[in-house]
Each structure stands twice: as C-alpha cells, then as structure tokens.
Image 1: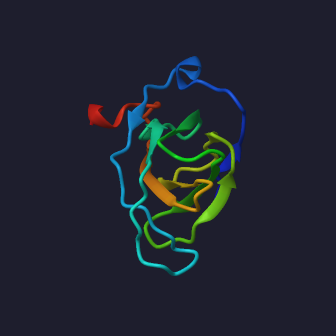
Image 2: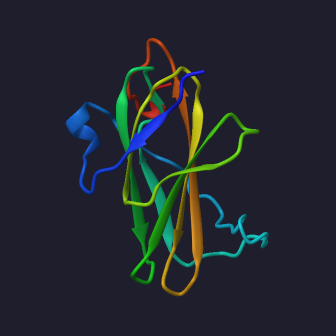
Length: 139
C-alpha cells in the first residue's frame, strides 16, 4: 500500500499548479473529539480545491473562513474510505498533498474560533489514472 504524503506552505494558489477549484457545500459543525452533538456555529467554513486528482498529482486545498472571531485554529484531517480513521495532516490555512498511491480519500477541515465555536467541512477527493485536478462539477 502506498501512502499519501502531505506538506504545507503558507501561501499557495491552486492556479499555480494547474488545478481548478471546487467549493464544498457547507456542513453542520460538530465536535466529534469531545463526543458532543452538533452545535451550530455562527461562522462559515469552506474548502476550495480539487475534487479529483491523478495518482501523481500534487494539489492544494485552501481554507476559507468568514465571520469567525480571530484568532482561529485550523486542523485538516484525511481518511481513506468511509470507514477509516481520521489522520491529522495539517494545521495551516493551506493543505497541500502529493498522491503516493491510488486510493480516493476524504479531507476534513475543522476550524475553532476564539469564542470556542467549531465549524467543519468535508470534501471527497477521487483518485484516477486519467484524472488531473478537476472541478467537482465537471463530472
């Protein structure tokens, strides 16, 4: 099994690496780690980045946070398949990854603001041999 490796950069644009972007739909905020039921945050979190990539692509996903009380803390998690465990891969506003394998994965962004409110967003990233950083709406 080949592993997915992630690295970070403070400022990276997906356009610079030839990727179209997709904005994931909003998801209800939650606090899985504390075992608490969802509470509704009063700020918006979105993930911008590719929904499908090729097995040898390196792409970036960018956190977009609006209406949160500064400062905010970010945590990017990845899991392979729907049943896998979440693995922390990044804590910066940009999450970049090179694919070293051929398994699709789910990427989750958790954002907590200074008022201790939590909002979360997820995106499914498909890996294909003939895919190259494409927008989710393209099919």
